[in-house]
Length: 201
Image 1 (cartoon, rainbow, N blue to C red):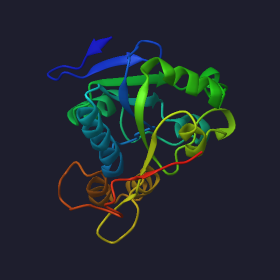
Image 2: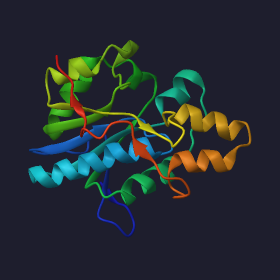
Image 3: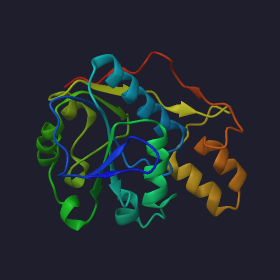
């Protein structure tokens, strides 16, 4: 377990954290763009309301880097620094390699039991386990699962790591930075402000 310099967030591998209760969000969080930021902030707020630690569970490298050859938007160090700046109590970094990829959705759910999530925040496109067989509906069969609506830019387009990566590849760096949401050059809005909706099994 490590402490990130200057902040209280603790960093763990995927076997290094055990809790009796938590609020959790899970994702690749490649670039920690404004959509990711909304998930993490929702998780931190839920943790505060519930009186439990907040946990961000992520992967290194991002799954698309291994599966599709996509270039990560940030190094793992920068990703952890950005996540930490949003104030979670813990970050779990799972090493995403061929062995991890082969784990089943059931394996993943069992592993989550170690941190006893009272609520899990995810995006609607979140999938887990080998062959992406794990769905939000499956997760909701075990945990209180909240799906956060997509975050859109002012033009109404959904912010995604894929879109940001394409902008960077095209040399449109300023636009990419605006979508990432760290430069504060462009206001963002939720596509819905209903606080997320529940996944149901």
